[in-house]
Length: 158
Image (tube, rainbow, N blue to C red; front, side):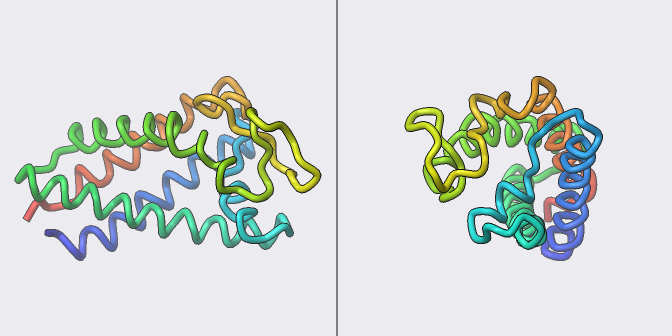
């Protein structure tokens, strides 16, 4: 497996994915603030939460990059289009499985099923994170396809 590629390009791909998601949020295209969502699992201070959230997202990105590297190694090849396909699958899984499950573990996120609590400061993401804006699923999918394309292009399936 390409350990050096995983470490370097997993980090680069994750930073770019995070930058695309954050850029869309700052530009008003999406209201999903991923670093805030992740960081407020641990901290209630929004500024501290965003810093910790970026770190959590980088670690998560490295874990997923390891899965991509293992898949490329198992298949015996990697291409940009395979990475893009993996990224699309990853993005759909994030939007339909991971993000909607967040209210179940997040102490500061309201749930669509149980409603808000006195502690909840974040609205529930909803299906495909649509509560954060109609363009949010498209932004997330594009960001994940870019992530996968980077990994498919630069990881060696050794």
